[in-house]
Image (cartoon, one colour):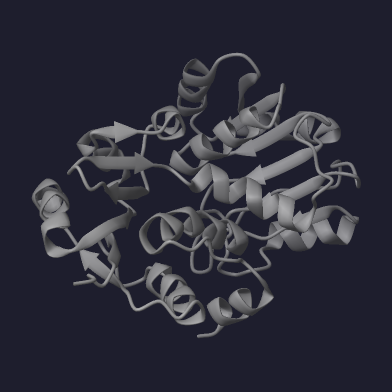
Length: 276
């Protein structure tokens, strides 16, 4: 008897997640008889739920806020990238019963840039990263793997930026938010990893008047798709990359693990994901 493949996404809350729509699209496109299910799981229930999923026929699951760090701790095996980032967003349940953890956020971030600007290089010049949270950790890992040698991590609370520098060492430095006017003139790549600029939230109040017009600017925020940061960068003539592609690309490796097909991220998918 052939079992129907099942995967899902665990979070608390989970109703806002776009992952079911993303994976549902791929299941339909590749005519796979499978399911992808959103699961609202509280922190107190996480371990019990994760360990029960294989017996329920699940091949794996995505993990979102607030469970990513705990998910890594629950795994029997973890990729080097997940350990560097300190969190897991993708769990795969192996036939031998072991839980395999990965973090595909760094992969998604880099694939997004490559798809839009394939000629971009992390080593072309200094990179300024706004924020020092979990997303920043994934971005810094991705940039270091791509050969970046000068990453300035800028955060309103400098201690958190210093924590990332302590974790990643050579090639990274910490800076205060007030230092941005001095950092932007030689920034080759500017990355916003904060929630500033997200619809319904606080704005990202940052002048790009001194940013070189040759720079690339990317924002992990995707609601709205064209943030004020990206619009300001485009007006200067800078290359821009929106945040939607990171979301789409980070989901692809897990889908391949669970359903046996490496899905394509294309314009049709972007259009579907932008529909209400």
